[in-house]
Length: 417
Image 1: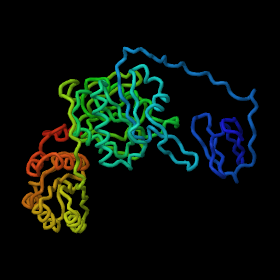
Image 2 (image 1 turned 90 degrees about the vertical axis):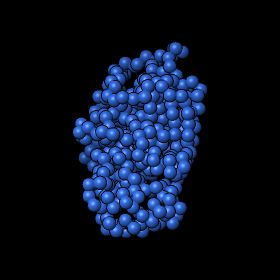
Image 3 (image 1 turned 180 degrees about the horizontal axis):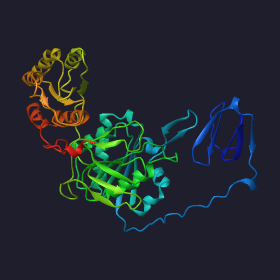
Image 4 (image 1 turned 30 degrees about the vertical axis):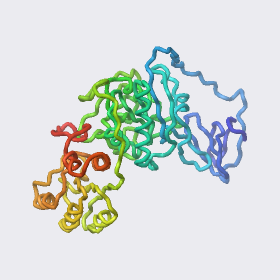
């Protein structure tokens, strides 16, 4: 067999017809006409027959979208960090891996050329579980450089698993007069069900809008009807694999982008293009952590981080923001030693309030700070940023202040799905 050859693979009573793909040892991989690949163990294959040329179905190519090359189009910077949107199947392992960069993404989605001209840059080529705070800092510097150079919008391709963390970090580190949009995909670009092209087109549309905030653009629904632009400090991945995995928490999305028209409909107030001057404060204190409370868990975990010199702790408490009473001593010790302890909720939706029950009031006496309606990971990133840029006492005050849209003073019932 030759790669790209059309064959019929006989396996038991079944016959699979398609194109031969790069195949690992002891496996035959064929791309079916549906666009999906199938791998058949070699020992289950009785024979492989080449398909005669006269029997190969002739497909009518769909009409192509004209590619506009006008120099009058606005300029957008695409910065690639890897992730599924920049991934293909690795036939050596059979797994999806990050394999190509921003310029390849442009080649995969020619319709992007109708919207803008592009500067393509490769920052990293990693899956997002490998993202580090120091990478956020370098990414902020790259975004700053692109905006300083005159780009009208920035699109960052990113893995979905930790995209919310990166979006929050950039929200605090950068003051931007132009949109900064993070985009990813749940399915790799070589899959027929890939959401990469649609997400990328919608992301560029937001990058060219006047929504001059950090946002995340992903599918609104599992079908290809529209995308949502979520505020970078109010978004979370809520499903492991669905294409509409990203949801705005305790806030409405910023906008909906209808597909394929790419008509943008605003849904919430936002900072507008040109309202603020470009600025960057990308220092981060990595001596911060999240601790999730579970029934019966030992408070030793708090002591561990205090002993290790951590300066900020986010407690992900129950309900309104509680932990067991046996944690009160460790919390007080942490606060007495200068650690800022912020309490959020495992519930995600709603607001922390430690004034309703006696446990909460005792936690307040021990020195905790209520995290309002912040997501735990946003509270963590905010603590890292505050402790690196402000004295501790000022950082404590700013924890409860809404700086970049991370805290809502009022939460509508409509925000809960």
